[in-house]
Length: 105
View 1 (cartoon, one colour):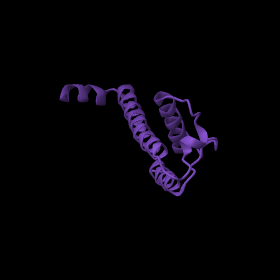
View 2 (cartoon, rainbow, N blue to C red):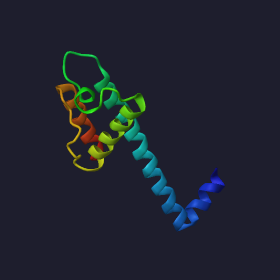
View 3 (cartoon, rainbow, N blue to C red):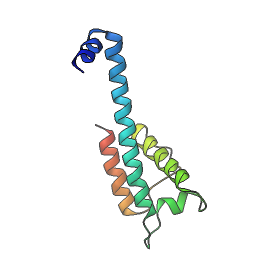
View 4 (cartoon, helix red, strand yellow):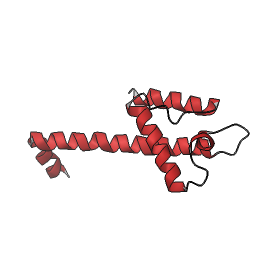
């Protein structure tokens, strides 16, 4: 482990590649967990409208719903979002506010 770290640190290219991989893994990890949270909010059976009911086809499977969730969280964290998927109730709006706060760090 120490030997590998020394080899990585001694090569500027490897150090750069290591940094890029770390940033990408962090971004993918945060996106995945945020997408899971976003999905859970939308999947709640409540009297209020949810983002899943408003924006995802009713016959969509779990994989498709996860893809919608990842798409929303990634576009929200990396841009201002496209506006095609939006929060539809106060709890979802709070989640998105926290997500935007996390994304600014």
